[in-house]
Length: 259
Image 1 (cartoon, rainbow, N blue to C red):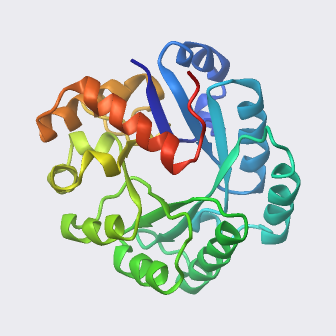
Image 2 (image 1 turned 120 degrees about the horizontal axis):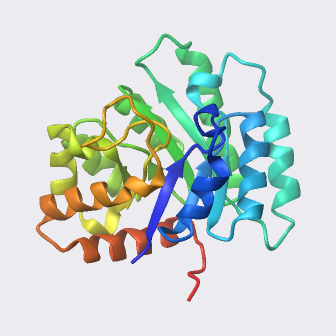
């Protein structure tokens, strides 16, 4: 069975030496892979890759750690305007956007960009990919007050397990990656969340699963370790995890499954 990696960053420099070789290998490993844009430069690269590889899709947005750089929401919106006129476009979501309180990025500026991207998601009726590191309470409040029509994915959710229930109740899927193999809170979140609301991701090149070193380069060939851990936690087969998470990915991104 093939995996669906719902979140990766293959435009990053960590892949400059062997990007194409990996993409060719993924033909045997994945049925879907979404490259996530984090700024305007990133958007152009992930669009290029998606148009070259049949299994690849992309999203564009302004990451909360990119808000102090020169970014233009008007240019982001223009890309959406142009791309979505094309019936074969592989642009399927907005993001990654949200809030990051781990580092010292200006909170009000992060909130401004987050709110503007929620507006874009609703305008173009696309799901949204949300980053919520150490900021789940504020993210929840913003999403409660500014409902996203198509909801989306709580990317690499790492907050309190009980808090995860609130996002699921709002219609969001939880992205589960390498941290599920390392942290008890993430394990517990997976345990209490229906497999029908879980998608898998790598967040490549970061967050590799065990047994790989925590700061080594991650990639989509490691999805089996994530699936194995989810299956162990849920007490179901790896085949069921792959089948369900792939089905969920097609559903949340509204991709017509290729038979």
